[in-house]
Image (cartoon, rainbow, N blue to C red):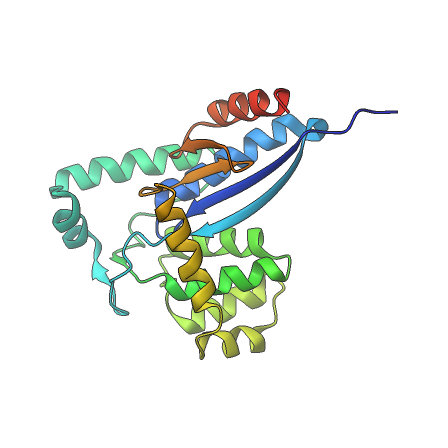
Length: 218
């Protein structure tokens, strides 16, 4: 009889407007692919808003980064190129010329909460990252969210009903408060089995080593 595989519960705390979260997700999935059948992994995406007070119309990205981080246009350009290159290394395409605004992402998190109940959360997360970072679309726009939901196999009519109401708003707020209370103030934050924290968009090798060490100790 084969020994039972180590079980890894992975809570991936992130925002769909966070480029390092897109990088971190692809890196972690590469690492899990390398572990293959050695572990049993269950992935859950948890909500985090980088800009919870962002208005619906969003803000021009250079203006936003200058206000929030004190970055000048040259720094923003250099950082953008570093992000693009890191994305390319893990198979994610950033098109910086397509993305010119930062948007509110709360409704995207409500839809992701529902997608988890329907078993389509990972597919929706990837699709939202692509919509924003590759296609330059607004992840707070209801028409975009409904369309993307349908593309990943969710019921578009139900998605529209959720977005036109406050369904899952309380659940998302509760999760956000919980992780803030746990000391999570930047993302991505990857929590394994409620005990081990891996912070940031790490290379696949870092995720792989950490996951192997955690699995070996189970």
